[in-house]
Image (cartoon, rainbow, N blue to C red):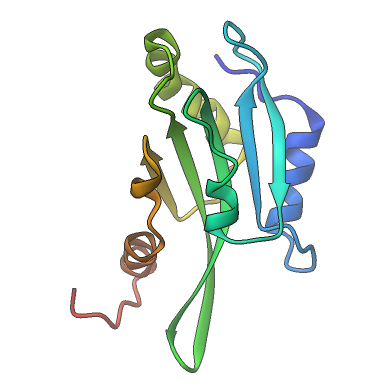
Length: 144
């Protein structure tokens, strides 16, 4: 079981969800190599590229991101995604625990439209994520 009880995690989540707050993402990392406690390591006001610059190959992380996209020139949508990041240098035992810990994280980061697993920055290309969000949202004007 992951410890996601730090109050700053809930505060950062509330800030990302709040339309009046400029924060658009948060990043959770483990407090140590053998710890199951997650801590808030970064927040930001930028986009997916800014968040990606904070991901490390040595870390297993969870991120929560507000994604803004347009279906056409008249409509803009904002959806929230959870990213489960497993860097290429993460230990096998940590990788094994991550799927169990994801359920604990989702109890705190409870509102999301999409979960995105990633072990490389290529897995976090924006366009495929937006396509998946459009399909999940039920109002897809794409033929794909």
